[in-house]
Amino acid sequence: MVQAPVGIKCPECARQPRSAIVRLKPNRAARAIGAAIGVGALMGLGIVLLQGFGLFFALIIGYLIGIGMGEVVLTASGRYRAPVTGWIAVGGCIWAYAFPYLLYYGVNLGDVANSLGRAPFVLFGIGIACYVAYQRTQ
Image (cartoon, rainbow, N blue to C red; front, side, top):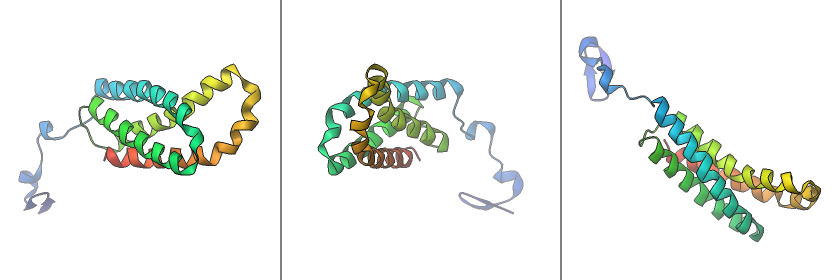
């Protein structure tokens, strides 16, 4: 006997048909990754405008970015919920925080010391955004 979602079944009855096993198709995964990169870049530009308000606001921004990125990745992947989409959303959140810094420091490398004072706030925001995005896609 085999434990199934609806109770105990014999091994033959517990086998699921191929159509019942859902997997993330490569085209939907590519769409989810593309959406995470594009929306992450847009969110990153918004972070630049709002990041200087301190720890409390960094936590709120992180939470909102996590919710937004989770929903964007879920929509682009066809509402596929799995660890794969969770990690795509986490990568999108990290990209959202990394994109403005890469863009800015590519232009002005001499201002690195000034932004190190905000590093703890940015790390808190990244952690919250990644956690929320991963949980939204599960």
